[in-house]
Image (cartoon, rainbow, N blue to C red; front, side, top):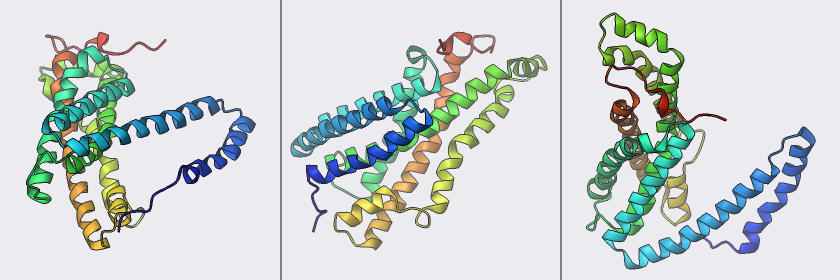
Length: 264
């Protein structure tokens, strides 16, 4: 037995709650009503297109199409990460792309091959949803680590340069900034893992139960996906910093100031 279908009217019924939301925003002087409407419309349109396209992907189940779709997802994720990190896209796109690609690919195929044990590792109904969950959960961690790392060095550049003047290597001088930004990036995921099942019932588990799976099977899938999310995010965070050092610093180990997006 699958999940019950939802009518358009059922989904539209949620719009009634916008009335008090808009009233409160207006009363508090929060000029975000237009932004909210734009976000809601974009969400509905984007998810509708994705639904149609996924039907196409699942029907043809082509390894080439599935792979191309995931690469496009990674590219879009990179753009979102760099935009949120205030770092220039043309300088950091390639380092961040490969920092995402390597751990993401390894964990995705490990999940399909060793955990779920499907014959076709490019099976669309596994490859696309699992890949989307891995990427979506990596975004925040990479944004945090890149933003904290480079903004921290920019803010304390004199301290960093002083460390270099004491004959420290670049790695030694950067270690305190990396440690701080790394902890900030991975702590939210660890906190989620520590409270999962007690504070919230996560998406994978909920989807499995609504789809008709018994709770114990849903729990097994959720544990597997949480392992995958944690490992993917962990290694993506490390590689995103390591791969970006070449463009982030010049030959003299000084921070390149032209990597930041200027705020008007």
